[in-house]
Length: 184
Image (cartoon, rainbow, N blue to C red):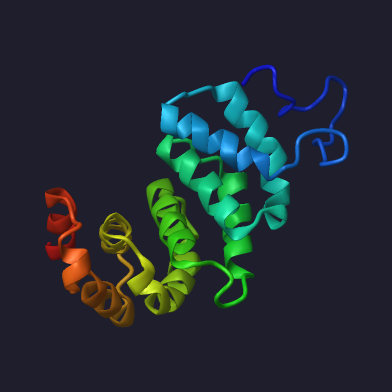
């Protein structure tokens, strides 16, 4: 990973663009790979943050969700990235982000514990019920747990996630700890 052009060239203050280097969207894949491998490289994460934070509008919904999920998984919460992602989330069109993207984003913002994310949680809570049946057991459990932990109580969200979790096809797919999160 160190040999890839993800940082700023020496002497330049502008991030790479897709014409002169790696497309910015690739950064979410690199961050996800680091998180999956539990590779904590502060220099690499800082470089990704510096490039991605001002350009969150360039990321597709899944790429943005994957990016902030990866940073959260690595317990790295650069405010400029998360607040830029929050602005992007709040400006999204209804239905633009699928259930998985909303679930991943909610979890990432929940892990960040950054002040000022309440409107993001409310916007996700208002939209996620229409995607509840699309979520897998792990996503249902982590989403429910996240909203409870951050103190955002939305009856429509909890009802839709609860009904989705109770479906016989999903109920069998929960691991014991996930089921405990859904029940408690």
